[in-house]
Image (tube, rainbow, N blue to C red; front, side, top):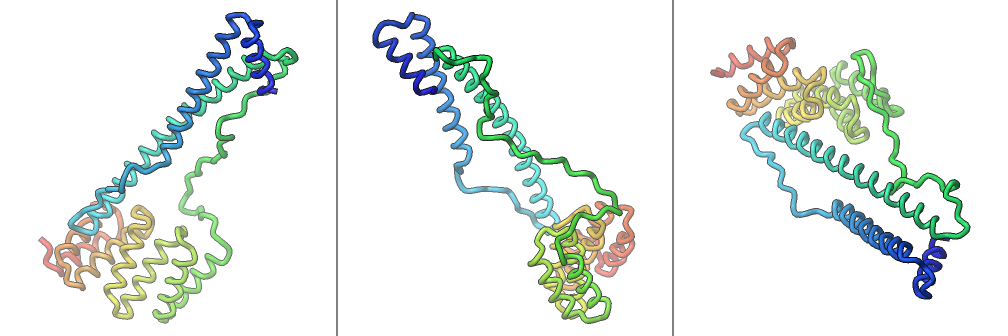
Length: 271
């Protein structure tokens, strides 16, 4: 119908039967279609990279690198919000322009009823509705996958029974099977304890680091940071151990781990 209307309008222009105002209307439509095309091309360019990523994740200690990662995540989140607002404005403006074009094309058609025009569909389709996350209380647990809680409990029972090798293997499998699990931080912490009991201090430190970086403000974060500092001390990384242990009281001043961190610092001779 719209192509027919355009053809009809062009035929009127070519045969000299269209008034000057309708000729200008067709020119306006062509111009606005061109502007919309340019805007769409600009949006497509948003999905093209401008070069290799250069995030600044440097740092002399583990905690400095963790802070650098958190800062970079905050920066990227801010950029994402800015781009999202910009795209929303472009979609809104483009949708309004398309609606205006439909109205004006209807005016050119002889059998078009303007009153029956449907609402213009949003450019790009309707955005999916995403409900805001509800703040959870300590008693409210995030929904887990089928078998997730059972596998975690099996690993924890093995750890409590002193079967550290089985516990470590089960928790390693748990981490691979359920990436991003709400139990991931606790699972990594327990795995670190199991590895430490087996004498594998280096892998235990990595597990403690994974626990802390996975949830640096969660209920087990203070203990994970304490265990990480203690493990670094056992590995001979005294300076980093002292910095890490010192962060326990800074980040979690009311945690029970603060006293243990102080004792560890004394034993290491931290100044």
